[in-house]
Length: 183
Image 1 (cartoon, rainbow, N blue to C red):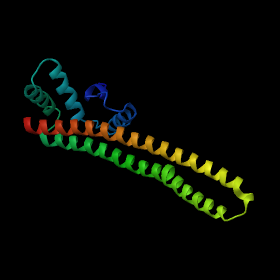
Image 2: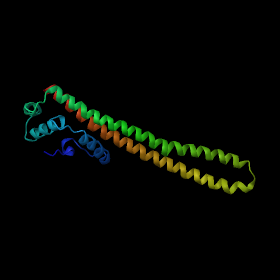
Image 3: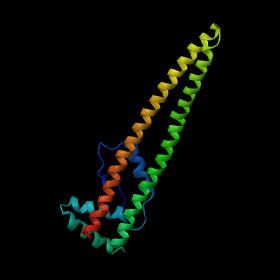
Image 4: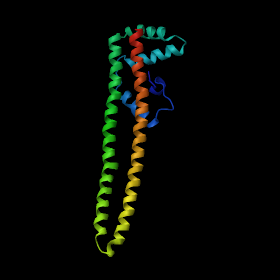
């Protein structure tokens, strides 16, 4: 049985598609072979689609799942497993973001500072160095624009990731609470 994770979760236009694909791939890579939260959710959603109310759908899916050895504790443990999968992706993203900031912003800011100092030194030199000052000023402007552009892209990526992560994480967490309450 193939599981379409995009259909399984409430994918919305508020989610960044690249981030969503990355997070769903992580969930897919973390799938258990035995019956777990994802397979339970698929059964549950199928029953909801047939018109059952949440409580009846959850109980019916659980009764079926229990024939495959699932218990409430095992189900909730697998909910936690997928939350951990998402948290691991969040940690990896935070590290990559930190590296991007160091590479694309901090290093350029340090270069801008170094070039400003060189401009000050050149002001003390003779008129022959004025041409070099003009070139350095242009390079500073280019680096600042590049750093600002990189910062905007990184912040957008971070915001897209957070928004998508939060929505997906919240849904999984709410499913866990719902199943915990119902079952």
